[in-house]
Image (cartoon, rainbow over all chains, first blue to last red; front, side, top):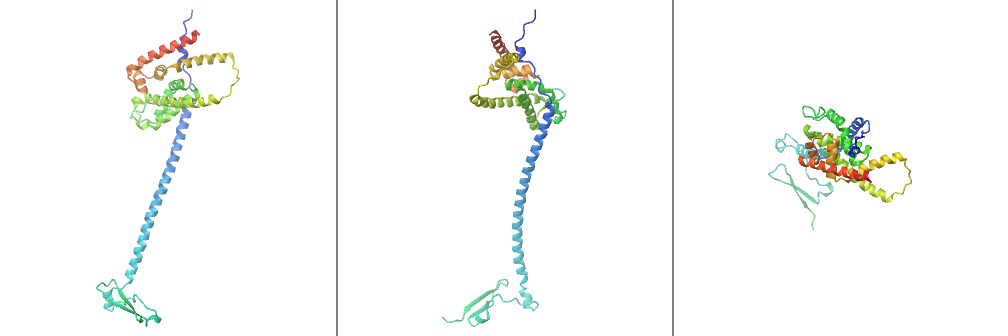
Length: 130
Length: 176
């Protein structure tokens, strides 16, 4: 007489998983690695581009500021030193204001003396009678 | 903990992951299968669990890696089950009646499987988790308790209740 069949035997009968599980896992991990690398590359490229754009903006602005400074500096350097002019060692600067030849009988120009040698004032007046 | 645990230095490297996979694949597959009742899907969930484990390798500890991977797998299986219920609900509503004829032997096997499945499915989740983990994995009661998040003492009592419920249910079915 055979033993009565345990009804739970069917419930807990072990099943075999499909073959090749480890190979599929390796492929899956590799695919995941590739996906991550691509995402990382995309993110770092975007970050790099953003950083490059920010640097270009900052450098461009600095360049413009330097240009302005250079121009101002050049203008300043072109002005001869008043001390050298007074000693006759440098040519006097050209007049800051010049009046056209045909207007000289109508407009008077007078340089105003000032203690600041770096700033030159001119006074303009009309000679025409009202 | 077996030889396939994280390395002696405590690092969980690719070799340790593969060793663990080889050791746990079968039991994990059987546990997950009792949630999804589909071999291909169960195999997929087991793999996904190991991919997730690899993602979290920095926080993996040698003494808890096994309960950890079981918990990941059970969570994934539960999520898929929920998603499938929704899909099935939609499919059933729109399904056309079929006239497929099945061979008698195949029908018999399927009927037996269906009865087993119905008996397991009839268990509440908290009992099913315990009975499947204790019967199909090599986890200790303490580790099962860690997977499920209950006191160790509760594992034994739930297992006892689950087995009794299964026997009753199957006896009813066989007695029909």
